Length: 175
Length: 246
Image 1 (cartoon, rainbow over the protein chains, first blue to last red):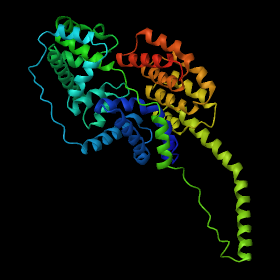
Image 2 (tube, each protein chain N blue to C red; image 1 turned 60 degrees about the vertical axis):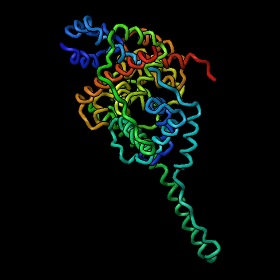
Image 3 (cartoon, chains in turn brown, orange; image 1 turned 135 degrees about the vertical axis):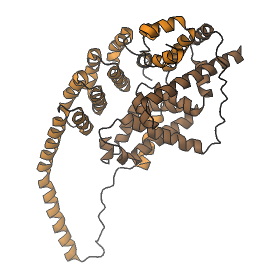
Image 4 (cartoon, chains in turn blue, purple; image 1 turned 30 degrees about the vertical axis):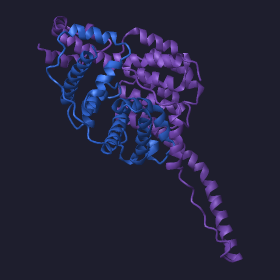
């Protein structure tokens, strides 16, 4: 980033080379449309160049990058109709958790888990994806979402329980 | 311990160990609570989700867009005065230009000294006892000096601060065209003892498609010291390197 801040624009290419894959993964899981996400990834790195002067030397690059990615996503969603909130039935807990476990174990291709993830409201989906990104700590996410690590952990816990409920509900519908 | 407390504690468990990583009260709770075991298993699966891959030509498309949207800073263009000025003025300009050229040539030697001084300053920062200084030094490094590689590998292996080690791995990308970097990656990975840094080195190995490091990656994956997410990332990297080049 020091090179980019010094006006050496070619170094944005180096940053792109290193970071575009996990960033694409995050954006893809957030909206599920490959070609669109590729455009969004490019937009993120063009903003890295445009807003390079706002990066604090010595601070971690990845949280800053993901903050830009969140802004790009938010701008994209502003152009779409508002999201219809998902009605989560708190009573829809699995009656037999061991049965739930067996289904999860059998689900080798992750397909059903991804479907359940896609059913979650955006903010919960985002929280789960960010918190399970090995490059970001709870402290980093707290900085991104202007919260505290403890509060983030509680929100992750609630989102995981919602994911579990949706996963089980989808399984019931399928069977 | 109730389920809420148990599940919050589960979020801090090392996912590679799963249920076996739980101790004491949490372990006792998990053994008797299928609900919380399901919660932990779901989290484990979430961390192990494979990362989707973008199109192989995305990087090339971005580089083309970057060249259009952020062209290299243009050199200042001299305005042609030829048709306006008299022969005398043209001669004067040539004279001034010649003098400027002479000055520029004389300045080359001090510039080289300035470069050396800058590199010395950067290396002093890299060797500073303060983590913040070392991070700053790493951000200022460039690929001009090959001897820096040894310093970087030494930081990757021995620095007490994980963030500095990670920044040193990032700085190694500056030398991606240097075969000496490639030849040392496998050994660096084998000696590394911090999982975050191991994963960062694996990313570098994949980026360089350095297949000689595959054995070290396989050992790392087998050792079982990585978390679920880290292990699946290493597995994906091994699968990627195992594929024949297109």
